[in-house]
Image (tube, rainbow, N blue to C red; front, side, top):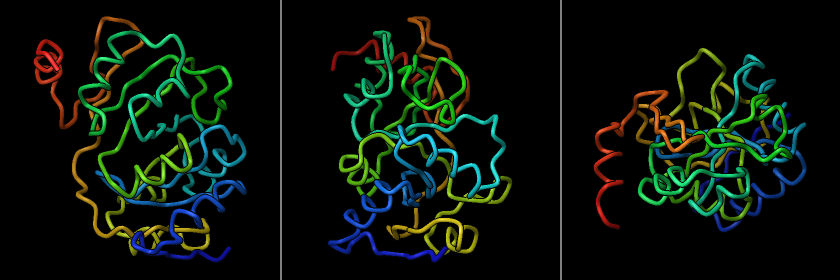
Length: 208
């Protein structure tokens, strides 16, 4: 497989990405943390190919990236009020909500009854997600290797494994997102990240 790098500034970048995704392929692109690689979330075979491209253990669920808080309804169901309130405050940003998943979501995304959902605070990522819809996305590296912050670092690891990389420059890198269990109205932090439990509680208690 030949891996192509296209600049995010190219007028054809999103169209090229959509063509790859709609044909079951994978696309790497920048986010507000590191570069991610992903597929259309409801394309089960494409999601499975993420594990192959990354040599990723099959038991690890893959997060879902969305463009806007309203898109949670495309992948979740019976979404608790706390999840909607958190999304309204912190999307886009470095916070992942665990919500009950749609039964039509492929098991390759999550073998459980829940799914992690996040909206990245990055213009290129959100432009792609608005065009493609929700995507199953994880870091664009070989599992166990450093997470890439440039398109060149993605190419060094995934060249020949994926068809397309969108080059949006260097990403901020840094700490992975805070993960919050939003499956009930009793909020619980599953992974500490850039946003603290105290900050979440403070923002939720203040008027929008």
